[in-house]
Image (cartoon, rainbow, N blue to C red; front, side, top):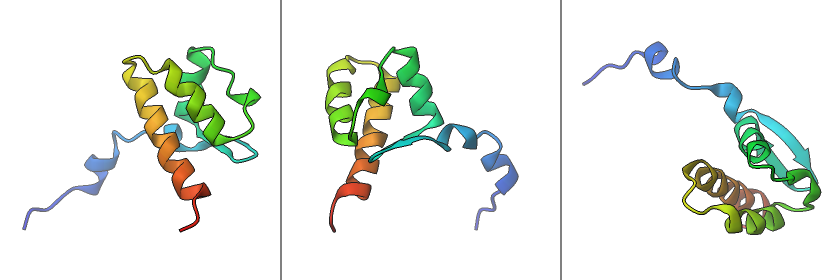
Length: 85
């Protein structure tokens, strides 16, 4: 069985990027998402729901890998937070 060194596995993970940075109504964004949205001059604070922000971001994606990742993560979070299972 292969052994792993936990310290070496987690040293490259930026836990601060995944910390929750913004919460309003049902919008929950991480530090990384807030930073990317600010860089793109997207006023995430003007939206009232995760769904409306996701719809707006879908128009901006245009082959931007960072924004595609943000959109995917936000869509996943929206599903798990706002869908009755």
